[in-house]
Length: 577
Image (cartoon, rainbow, N blue to C red; front, side, top):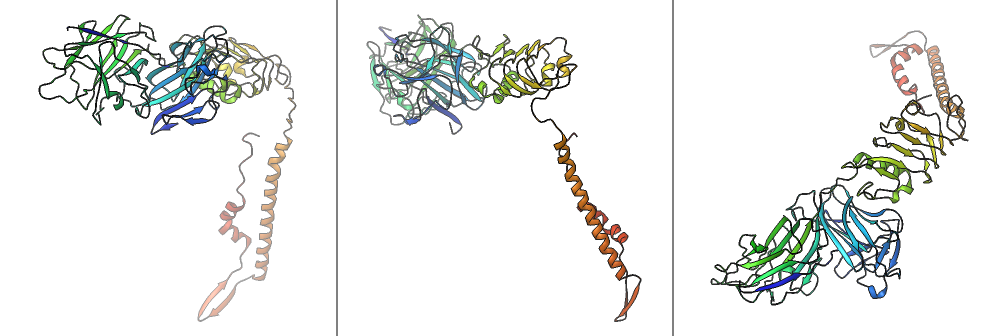
């Protein structure tokens, strides 16, 4: 190698409707209604997706695009989340954008955390417009993207959110228990961003100018075959960079990394020759890492793409990669069309214990005020929902429910599967009905505060005989107290209407049956009187006997049908008297 030409990769920060089984959701946070942008992407406002937060518009001199010019700001709660339905096991690309735009005239862009599915994603520094992107396999039927406050008076916000379904074979060189966190995605020598519809998966490919001494070269091939696992769009393969001479290299160095350098990296390089070579020409090179050979020879093909990936390697900010010509085989210099650079996340969580998630969902279904909380209940710590506490198990268990003074009304639902609960505090609400028996059967429950509600009936024996449970039930005027009769709760407890409602219809039916039998009996008696005795008749040499029909005969032959018709009683109105 006679000369080295350095190319610094400047990394930009990479900041819920199903189509053909793949999710494709575009949320314009802080906006109302919907619109279609210049890329034919339909954006929808978030009013119907989240109830918390306040909408704002950036100052005009900070305008970036229509979707980035509105935002939703959250001044309450530890975290606020968007939930989007997907197919369990689907591979998705999630992108979240943030444009502070001095919306509050304070010139104080906040710093806060971004989460997905209970996993820490990144700490957002909103001093400039920024967007982040991750690719992973979802573990449930709903994904959540949350912003979480980490500093006093620094309120998190979000400008837009995108979710795109990917083919299951894409980016499959890591296991499903890890996410790819995008640092950069470049198309070399391009003049503008490439995204949907040129890229059907709506990846954003940013243009990257060549470094000193490198040339822009272009491809005039009409159709380029992109049949490789990660399916780069043809548009990013139309251009490339290359040194002017066959004995020169392209050196790629890492710039700013948006994710901790301790994370291993995953890199995709894409190569497509820009000219059809004759029999005397060849283009052969290999990848070096820190000047050490790292790959087998790479031979890009005109009209096709060669993808070379590196997965799970450790780098630092001084790491360099070199596309080095193999002098004995090549007559043309190396080239490169596009690159993707990811950090590999820590192992993804499976989320809060499923039984606890189910129990919390039953509480949310029963009490509308609780439906404002979403995302993973416990994770990531310490950003659990405000009204619960969790332990540190790998799949955390909910140990405390504190819903005191939440203005809850109605009866308690069944959340008996939450068997790790130690404390339940429901005091100072308007809960009614009987105290559920399952509360006394929760094996780890130590404190149960039901004070100042409107519970009625007696205390279940599972609670009253549980010596390990500290019960507080004062302030329930309609609750039965040991040694005293149950007070009325103001509702009509007289059972006479129920009794009359059952007995009167039964008596009416019995009277009707008796009346019918009497009438039938009288009619048959009349017939018997008119035809008493046996009378012989002779007709055409034949004789017949007409016999009088008695009530007894009629019962013998038709009694079963009469019973079927007249004596079937209705089902009782109440199972218990």
